Length: 418
Image (cartoon, rainbow, N blue to C red):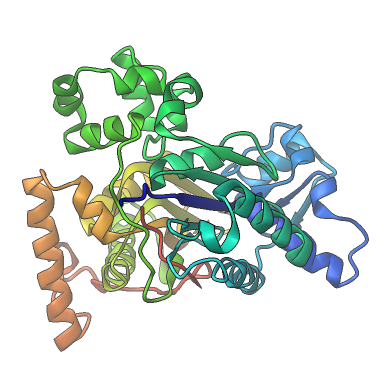
């Protein structure tokens, strides 16, 4: 007799903020960051960096994840900012996973603060799904000191969508018979894999809700979005046959690369070459880790030590040197005011497993050509050294085809796949 799957998606609430708060309380910090306007970000004194996570009190000041610390302090002068502590986050994540592994071996680490758990066939051991989900939620709160949301459904996309319903410390179901009531009225931006740009294009087609996307003309979606349009329409209808699969290795949450130049870059073409050399390094590491990125950022430091940064989320993850470089050029053009440059940095985050990305982009011949080229260049560099292959633009430029060191944003975490 067949048994329908039961999938949990466990998502730590405001993970970075919560985990930093717990760590600081253990060190004797007088306040709980979760109860005051606070953010996890960069350097509080210099106000460099961006907001990575925010408390609920900070949210009331309209502070947004991803905005600059300077902008956040302008909204709330009494804001408390603490730097990220990735070693603490790894310990907290590992502790959460240790608890989850007591309930099943079929566990997939989706990111540092999220896991999928296959609960199929486990009811005889730990009770009905909602009973078990409640026990897991309460154990994590009692034993580890932070709260989680748990989504329960018959597949991964619906479980993930369910866990994003009202927060914090909640359990939600989203089965196929509940899609029309619970998911279809939501704005289309709430659907997994619908980024800002895809949302805007969907709005131009008159598609504003997940339900409208689910019922849209498939041919029109394909003509505008190719296979990505078919994928998000499947998700809008709750269709997902991916399995919960255990990650076999630890990967990275983010990768960064930066270089301090021996000269001041004063023109776009020179800056572009430096950016490209940094991107070459980052993307080779991405491909080596079999990962792709959805969030791309650059940072610039002028010869007067002025610092600023800019980031952009893309709809479909990529490990392509050309794709990442194209976004970095756009960001640079929007950011640079012409002051001579001393240091440039490139970073990528919000990583996903390449197996998943390939499934969503199978129709792109151009992509396949670039991927084959990247793979060939990587193989040459691995065998003969980083400077064994390079683009013609670097000839006689005085700039290495690959440059920069490991960025400050590099830290280990788990596979991110669906």
